[in-house]
Image (cartoon, rainbow, N blue to C red):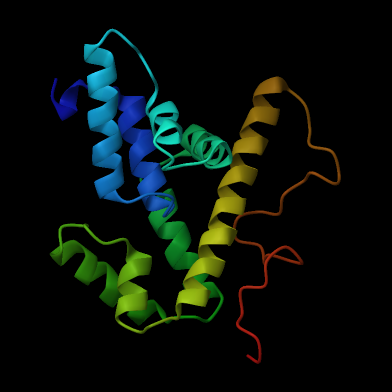
Length: 178
């Protein structure tokens, strides 16, 4: 069984888990191999189940990836990260463009956040704050989509701000003292 034998859902799940910095490509490859072996033995585990079984992801992380998978669009994760970094003053648009060029030269082996940290455009703490905000926004989009499919409006305390709205009170993205 080759990598092309994995379902589109498994490939998307794995790509999102990597893009959300929940796992590495190396761990994903190990999990896909374990899934292939389980399927060869007659099982049919989803990639998320395999990753939990191998202690690569927690159940909560699998849920977050599944939620993001429901609202995924190929550019959402990358562009959201860059937009949050620029909007919060961690980097300039020029810094982002330079990091995206480096990312393309490396065959997209590195995520844009990794490039920005390695090139000292931003700190690891800033990177982690953006990841937390990004995960929260994607989860909010998934909740909105689910509520729309169910025909209900979110309760006032569950309503999420638009993706481009400031992260009021949930995550402080600016480093202390700025």
